[in-house]
Image (cartoon, rainbow, N blue to C red; front, side):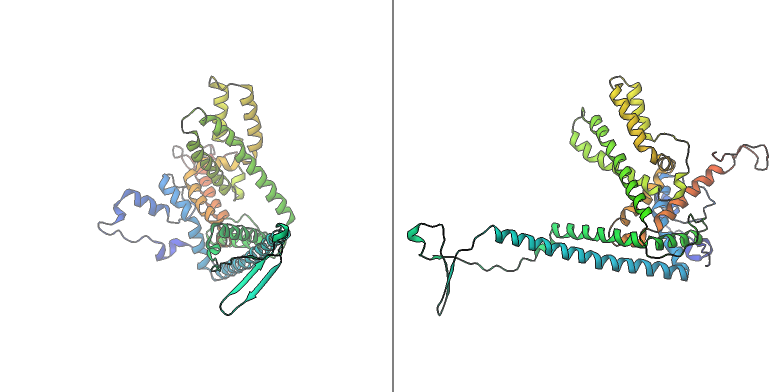
Length: 393
């Protein structure tokens, strides 16, 4: 498989600036430079706008690398398209079957709870008269017919565009997508390996022959990870409620802080998609635990044993994510940009095309940061054999 170098092609070079264009704006220069893919031997971008657009555009550059190689392009398109077709077929089947089952259940319940009275139909030249006789009417009126008025209504097609319909369809597609990805995730690992090799990054997985299979070990690991992630997110909500309780507009603040808290964890779990995000063994507390520890040990009014016990419990339940959280603190803007792409990959069908690119993009960001940390200090000569290494132990 041939390696792809975007710097060797004329298309990868930025066009010359035009007089009076956006190129003269400093902010646009940050956006353009952040969206330009370069070799990972260069340091990670530091400017927030530069770093954000760098993380946002990394999956796009990985996609370009895959499309530049014939074998990798063929594998990527075949896998993504076949997965998307399987998700559509399975999702629509689940949607149709669930709708029919719900309709049958509602009809049976309506029929069983209702007793139909006798019906008498009278036909004439210009009308059809339908008469019923109620059983529970007075005795003298039991045999007297009662006219029933029928109104014909046009077929209601609004259900196909209602929120309930689209919510049910979205749920069915999500279930179908999860099943398809769980059975064919080996192909995503192979695509991620291709993208790593084509962009000069050491792959995290060895050579493999992808096949359709049910990996029970991966299912158990994924279920455990999702449960621990849910607990870590949930434990922060009482703290947010406690901090906003004495403030005005508590509900408004919670409506902003709770989604922001969840978004932070989405960024952390985006970084955790790469195995390089789990190499930090310093055990440094994340920013929210440092804040809560200082608040409950040094601020008067919060130094309660209950709050300190909650801090220890919160630390124990969040310890599994300390390493990726530390990586996010080093590159928050870059991983925030990449998290937007991962958010798009959670949508039905888009996951088939974007999922294999997220781990490689995260690995590129982590490798660039590790390379910058391992670089020798500019205050020391490069050839000095006694110079201390800046690589973390």
